[in-house]
Amino acid sequence: MDNLIIAAELPHSDETARAWLLPALSLSVGQVVDYLATMYPKNKGIIIFDPDPNLECDFGHLPPIHTPCAIKVGFRSDDNIANLISNTLSTK
Image 1 (cartoon, rainbow, N blue to C red):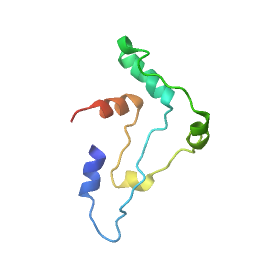
Image 2: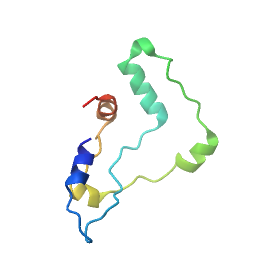
Image 3: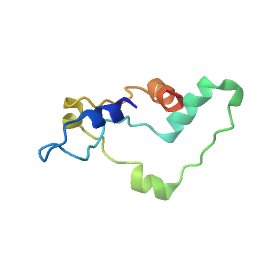
Image 4: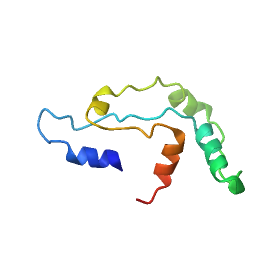
């Protein structure tokens, strides 16, 4: 939500980028599922996934992204998996 506010408040001119690669965490689906299981232990096993070799081949080994321009204007990532899950499930 904060990044949307930052984007809305950026000056709109020909010199200002209109598309941004935002800072992001590099996590596997397994890491997210495991973290959710620790947050909701009574529901362990409800969320499952099976790795897909074709998708993993296309997306599973991408290099880390670097977003110094986005960070310079104020865009932020969630910093850690706990914040990512909390912010995703938030009803702000």
